[in-house]
Image 1 (cartoon, rainbow, N blue to C red):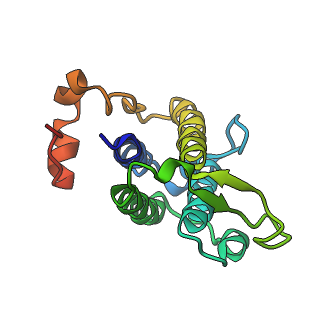
Image 2 (image 1 turned 90 degrees about the vertical axis):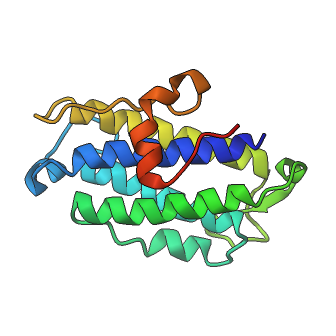
Amino acid sequence: MNLHLIQARANRLANRRLLGAVAQLSEADFHAPRTSFFPSLALTLNHILNVDHYYIAALHGDAAMRDIWATYVPARTATELAGRQDESDQRLIAFCEGLAADDDDRIIAFDRGAGIAAGPREPLGRVLAHLFMHQTHHRGQAHAMLAGTAVKPPQLDDFIMLGDSVHRGGDMLALGWEEPV
């Protein structure tokens, strides 16, 4: 069982639901000041995507990871953001699909501004754990901000347990996915 793939797919499902709800907001509500670490839904959700791009570049060994981070152009609308996040999520899923059982210990190098050679190195399993935690952390903040609007925040945590499959059937069908046996 590829637990990273399960997490990557759960991440895509949660992003799909959250961004679908956020897309119901006006552009003004998407950018409106709110209480959180990043003070708007637009800033919070763009932060998630920018960090995703950086970490996925690192996972792929892309030497331009720092430039990818530094040149990120925030999405202006929730619809634009949803499309870009979906592409990123699909790239992460494809990466996780290709993992072998012993890849968790493979070392991933990072460029934090001094070049890859001088940057930190982390085992792949820890990098993915951190990435999924980061996404969940900030999605929770966006979920709370959405609760302060007229749009009801969606359920985001019924994607991993087999017993919860009844709650994700529509999402799975829309994505062309089937439950693993």
